[in-house]
Amino acid sequence: MRHPEYPEYELILSTKFKNALCKLIPNETNCIEFHIKNILINGQKRGCDGFIRNKVNGNVVYISTEPIYCGFLRRYAKDLTDYTGCINQFSKSLKELADDVLRMLAKDLRGIDLNKWRISPY
Image (cartoon, rainbow, N blue to C red; front, side, top):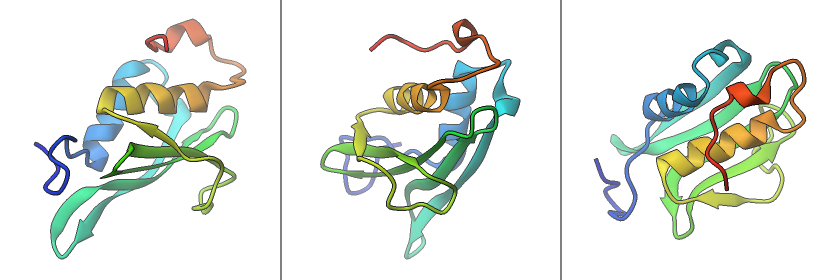
């Protein structure tokens, strides 16, 4: 399904994003904590936003899949309430967003074999 205002982008809701990220790490999903919700404006689904946290190293990433001219937003956050966070970064597709978020979560990861995290190269 395409986004109603930005037809060049697909509509990514919370369950779709969670499933895409979990497919990349099928044996490590218990290490990831999701705090994301769907964005509804006047009853219309627009995407999702919120935080994803790596329980092992504490990395937190904020995402918003309501597209803007650059794509889907992702950035590091200090905690689960940091909506200002670090530098904005953008991804153009669901696959790219899931790969990029996983890289951000895995940075400096300790205790988990990074070879198990199936990530496509940049």
